[in-house]
Amino acid sequence: MDWNRVEGNWKQMKGKVKEQWGKLTDDDLDQIAGKREQLEGKLQERYGLAKDRAKNDIDSWYDNQTWH
Image 1 (cartoon, one colour):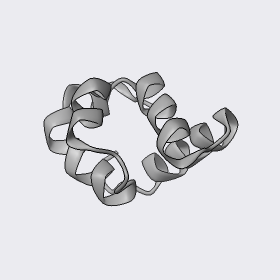
Image 2 (cartoon, rainbow, N blue to C red):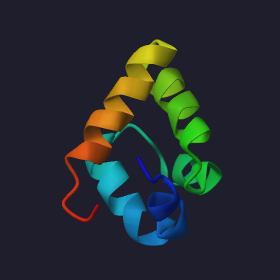
Image 3 (tube, one colour):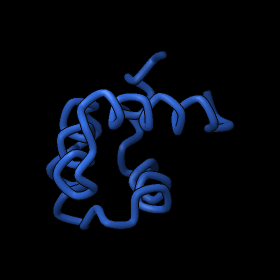
Image 4 (spheres, rainbow, N blue to C red):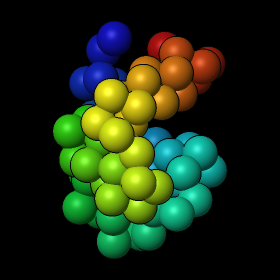
């Protein structure tokens, strides 16, 4: 997985992330700034997910994107 594509295009990716995880606020997305670890942490915080579950959900979301 090349997360650098997400990080490098974060402004465009924020909308896709928000569609997937609507509980994330705009402030959350600004704090995440494309960093995967930050996204994992915010998913754990907002959705009450375990670390492994957040990681797996992100992997699944990434794999389903048509741009990679």
